[in-house]
Length: 275
Length: 275
Image 1 (spheres, rainbow over the protein chains, first blue to last red):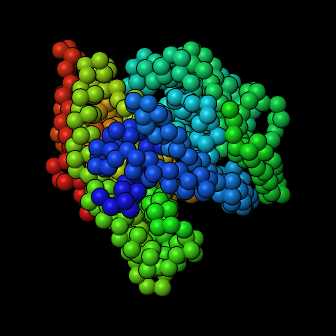
Image 2 (image 1 turned 135 degrees about the vertical axis):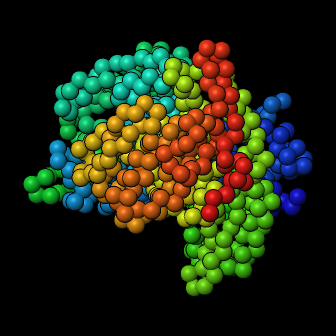
Image 3 (image 1 turned 135 degrees about the horizontal axis):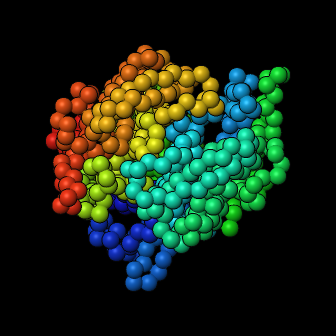
């Protein structure tokens, strides 16, 4: 196999399995190459990934030696994305009754999902979450993509109790914005005891949903290692959860004057790292 | 830039944007390379991808010349996956009351999602869907991943009507298995008129849900180009939709004798291509 071909295969293998430890011995067999040659290739790939801000390779030495590709996002790309989102979501025709903003179309797009997934994954990878938890429905795409880049399962809490899931645990929570009591459920089998959980959602007002998810995790004796939302409203200033990361802040939705103001969230002010 | 570095960058660029046309002119600028060098690199990448059954590159000639990476899955990988799924889902402790099978954990895993996403995307790429539609909740992960590989948005029909979505269209449908009348809704803005829609769901018994999704598409004057489900039950034999692709068939769930039988679906018998 020519070196150029091997580099295509190794790059592909790493990108197809972000966050997963890949065995050097297995690579050597699959590519019929000496480990020393693979190490040179990996050094090239690492250099390129780091130079471009697209991630890095962690080498694990020893008998079961291997390599893990962890994704990152170049600050320039994150900034470009922020500009694009603020422009697109800042349009007045997105205002919905009740101070909501129509943003489903954006969060349905493949490139937006990849970018947000990378942003969330790179922010929390150092905290080694082993599951991403969201609540149905609109945050699921983000949870799926963050989990892809973190190489962990995503789990969805349901707003109803579906019996096709087997035994489940339910919790009541108060939606902070309209003060309604709501229920969310999670199948007993879906979250292992002691799991390190990253909570992901698309939108947060007072934080009642995230607080409910946190309570649900406690029922499973799971640890919440972080909370990430695509957009948080600036009001109410005091949220029901103390720590969260928001990519964007909805600073103003003026239904009367048709004005929307979106700012970047604390993700950007803290350099995109939470560990 | 050394050739090996450029090959890492090009492989990464293509894999980060499956299904998306990438401009040769922009690549030449970004990589500071002659188009002839890029073409040589692309030839290497194409050869490797095709050899490994991981996809191919389509070159678009002319002034706006570019290249598109379309994903595929090696038949051997698909077969290995089928064996793994049949083993894992064939466990008796997965039987749930009512002839259902607990499979959420499987469909939450990153590698399973990638594999199923690739299988569905490669099967339907020739039909050029421009949106993947599912209905909440359990098929969303599959829809997200299929849409990623097809480079198109995914859209979720809701089982309730959420007013935060703006104007929406609802349809009633009869669940084929328990004969209950149910509702699904789709935001008016979420599906453009004339869209080519690929329907994706996790589980199908009689096909009522897929029939409902088909009816919903008709309301939007959208064309259903295909229907893909992860698992279909063998009973009832006659389904409410005439054409669908299933990856697996649930042939038997015996609650009394704790036996499950899973077969491969028509995806495998038709060579994984539907065009």
